[in-house]
Every structure is written in structure tokens, then in C-alpha cells.
Image (spheres, rainbow, N blue to C red):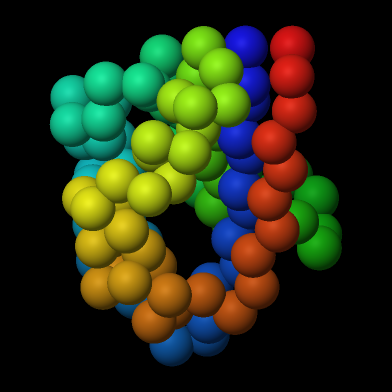
Amino acid sequence: MIRHTALFKWTDEATSEQKQKIAAELSALPAIVPSVRSLLLGHDAGLATGNFDFAVTVDFDDEAGFFAYRDDPAHREIITRDILPITAQRVAVQFKF
């Protein structure tokens, strides 16, 4: 299994509506991208200072599944249209488990 986790810090100009739209659109991806086995996401709970604002974790059977998700047109559109315009910082990791 491969787990992909991405963390985002939003720009100061990012609106609540934009953030909610991203969460809703990403939540729809398991129905669109067959290789997605599990998708969890959420906004930071505010329990510690310095955290990122938003996290998404996606599980796949294998590396090919990750690449299918990464390159999927629906996923790429969400990134280009909605995520990149309000992203101040992003970090990600993929690991086997």
C-alpha cells in the first residue's frame, strides 16, 4: 500500500468558501479515480501554533495507483483551478505501509 499525505498553508486572502470548495471537490475524487482506496482530509483543529492549515491523506494499492491519481485530469483541474491560487506553502510525502 502507498499512502500520500499533503499539507497546505493557505494565503491570507483565501476565503472560507474557497477552502470548503477544495474539501468538497477532493472528497469527490474516490468516485472519480478508481485507484483511490481511502481519502481523508480536514482543516487544522487549531490545537498547536505553527501547523499547516489543511491536510489530505490518500491510500492506494500500489505506486501505479498513486501515479494514476496524481495525473488524473479531474485531480489536476482541482489543483490548477482551486488549490494553487490560494496555496502559500505545500509539503507532501508518499510512503509504503
